[in-house]
Image (cartoon, rainbow, N blue to C red; front, side, top):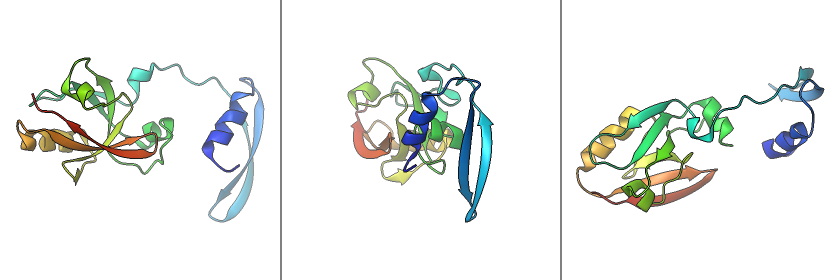
Length: 150
């Protein structure tokens, strides 16, 4: 298969309890395995990653969670992706004005890389009452957005 989307599509057409035979390439060696499929856990979209409280300081109107390798995979990103994941956006907030969306991964604040919620909080507090420039990873596409100060 050429990508994970193709694998996901093929597996989605199989029923839970079916056995899928996979050939893996790991450390330059092929290995055949059989896996029994199960239903994906039901988890509301808003619960991607462990949520943190709304960020203090200048009120942006977002809740964040730490991006883990598992969460990155759920979002279709490479597991080594770093940043924090937006778990909620308050309607009418500066974050909504800046076009942030749930499941966006924030990777930079004012051109400084961030990897943790604590780093994000410190960067936002350092910005004071100024607008902030965020580098967002949205489904593998990178874009900059400005979140206005309030």
